[in-house]
Image 1 (cartoon, protein in one colour):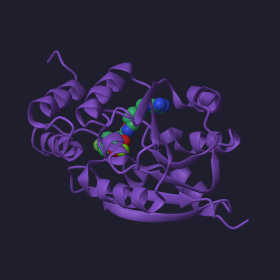
Image 2 (tube, helix red, strand yellow):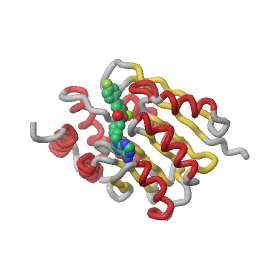
Image 3 (tube, rainbow, N blue to C red):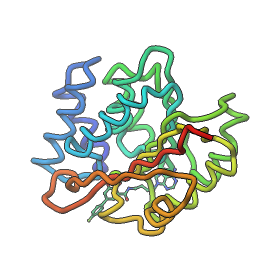
Image 4 (cartoon, rainbow, N blue to C red):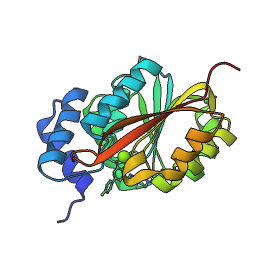
Length: 216
Ligand SMILES: Nc1ncnc2c1ncn2CCCCCNC(=O)c1cc(-c2ccc(F)cc2)cc(O)c1O
Ligand SMILES: [Mg+2]
């Protein structure tokens, strides 16, 4: 068919979701992807883990690696206090445009900036480009083979502070074994696994939450 899966998801959201209502946008994506065609959104089950971590972290500056259709971007942005900012990096320009329109439909575009490019190129530019010191919360959901490399890049670029929270999707399926090993053995992090299910399926998956301890 002519359109891409993200464009079909966008059209469904524009057709059935209430403009300015983030929850109806999330429900529209979840019903489309559970009934019509699967897509790699974090989904509602793992989304509830994401919600809980965002609410307990109360982040002011958020970074997301891998935007796709913007489902998790909406999920996070809807819970942010006024003045908080979410920057999401997406490599695929078509995905980025779909995400912008889904985020706009949810009424959250004022809180969100989608940066188009590869994380390894953009992360080193963030301090200068965004005039940001540190990120309080990072949601990692892009290429699974890039999780560890990009986390180390965030460390090297001094974008994390004691108490920064990293939450990684798909650490079981498709899996990010080198990231898990690093997070669970590095003295720099305290890590916790949240078992769940792969979006819209009965397959086991889970998310890993890692925090740089506050105490010196
Ligand atoms: N800024 C950037 N830098 C680097 N890569 C970048 C990027 N921006 C985008 N990409 C390129 C990756 C985009 C896709 C990442 N997500 C995934 O690959 C993913 C796959 C599954 C999956 C599970 C079981 C299956 F059978 C099949 C697929 C589930 C998920 O929840 C996933 O998040
Ligand atoms: Mg994912």
